[in-house]
Image (tube, rainbow, N blue to C red; front, side):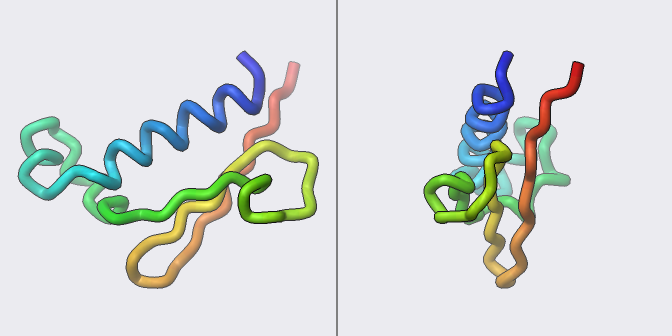
Length: 74
């Protein structure tokens, strides 16, 4: 798996969670991910970040942002 593939997979997973409501999260046993409901995701490429790394930015409703960088090592 490449860094780009993992980045896309994680974005997809968090993206799916962002569309769930509290009840759906509870039914799935994912209550601890409630802060991701309504999250906005964009890849570094989509956001115009000047980096060669793969990754994405998670923007939460409270205005906070988290940058997730994927670096493959081996």
